[in-house]
Length: 546
Image (cartoon, rainbow, N blue to C red; front, side):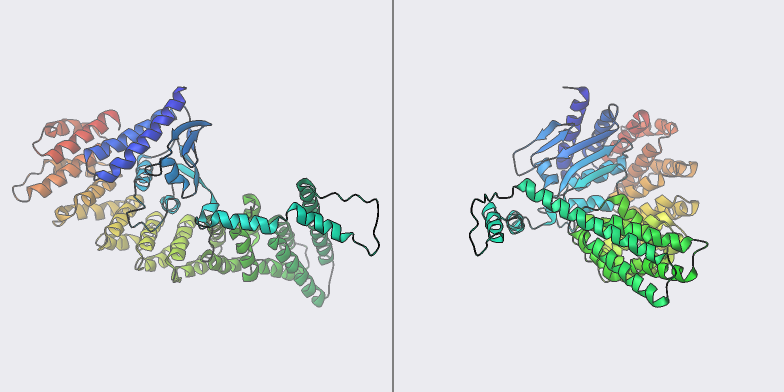
């Protein structure tokens, strides 16, 4: 066995171990912390050999480079089946994987989906995390109802493909005459013959559509009376609808490219430009985009590059129809394609795109926020600030994340208010958003919260999050504040004070400043178990970079 394959197996084993431990222990427990560190080390050891760890998932097996690295025939605690049943077919970890990404991944796979009230499946939870260094491939067929999927699939195949007897009968009936024809041998069509026939018919249809659009374009390029131009527009739109209905996005793109060329031509007739513009606008109309949505939802493959080119030729009037089908599509893949389209189109009209934030469906609102975040235009901030008051926690988390990435006027005040929200998830999202902004003003908001007299009454995990975010600044003020807190002693509320001191030790470990070692060593044998454990972990992190 190669060393590389051995390391891949060790990573899988560490996943299995973590899946159990992270479910059993709280995040401040040393066993929990050590498990995460062990996982991260296993992955780093693998990355010495290869930059990517690509795992192919089967129902009971996981493969790396055609080698089986995991097998279990059991239904319970089967890691392969855990991924497979939600449609995951391949998971790739990249060398740039961060500790936080790894922890988020392990938290997701540690969830007990059978017992816990989890709103989303694994794929959706992965998608929400927007991993930069974890990629995955999903089989869309799992979206079908598992109970009758096989029966439905068989029935559809039987409806679509006639049996040999039926073909033979149809072939014989076609040649029946009133008089019997003798000495004729009838041979049934084979599957290969049928496939060749279908391919030929399809090619013939495409060739004719190509030729039709070529002829239309040649006529359109000539001077025309106004009524003839109107007719030409109708012909082009019919051709576009027909082509999209067949999934031929390439042909539609070529038509739109020609219209754009006319529109941009310096010496083109203004009347012709007006109608070229009309064709480009109609290509983004609700009827055509709805038809496109049906094609995407059917599972028909559309080449990514061709679709991207098609979207770039559309005008901003296509934004509303795309938002409309976004809320109606059933396929994860189709929704992802539409989201990518709106990221391109949204740059042309942020105000129109932002109207999607008023949709009554929470998942549509969350997707629009994600799109605005990906566009990265600060003009969206004013619209997003109003959405912070949304009633769904998933929407609030997404909008807070977007505000943290976009920044801008009014964001800091809103995030500071969210730190006092009744829901811990909202407070946590706001804290991370402030850490993402990394400005002096954001740091001051967090430090003021830590200095507040009510901070000591927060849950330990939440206090720990504050110090983890503060460690992002890695400056003297944060370092001195952590040093001051770890030294602080009190006779009143000693348990809470020890929690604060343990958090300060955790922060010093994350800062990685070796000047803190003498102080940390002073407390490594402290009588308080919690402080002692976090001091030990901080020393280990500073000395060994773990």
